Length: 168
Image 1 (cartoon, rainbow, N blue to C red):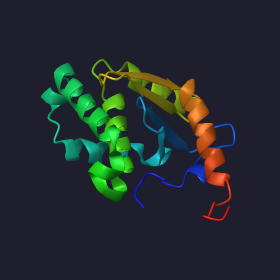
Image 2 (tube, rainbow, N blue to C red; image 1 turned 135 degrees about the horizontal axis):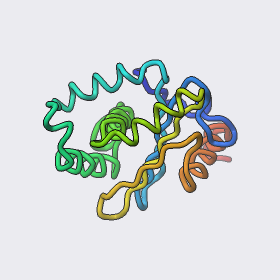
Image 3 (cartoon, rainbow, N blue to C red; image 1 turned 90 degrees about the vertical axis):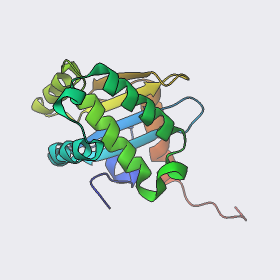
Image 4 (cartoon, rainbow, N blue to C red; image 1 turned 180 degrees about the vertical axis):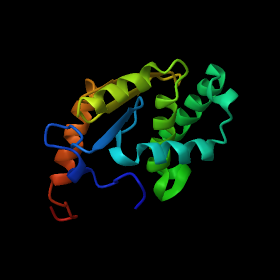
């Protein structure tokens, strides 16, 4: 199943938060369904190392804002239709890329916020919101931000809803 848990219900609480021991990434792209990916908190460093290898990042590229901007545009393109573009594990790979980009942002402020939440015993929630041009905004906190929290709540409700067949 990979590092991310693709089963939403057991990872999200009824109020749309990620359970203790996990970190969550909510991605909101205009006119697309919200996507929430969660990773076990104790596996984050392993996920980051694997994503860095997959991205073939050199130290110079990792510290280069232009390299990050290019990768964020690639994340935006993939987020337009992750299942169509990347196959069955596309959402998890997209979450890995986004996590790597957030926690390796030049300057390190987002990583410090993330680490501070973990030190406080809180599950970090990363909310990524894109505009129509592929520019991303990131908020890290003890819950998803604004629309992402509403989306996570609806994912919990949808996951818990009984199946609907053609006769229902």
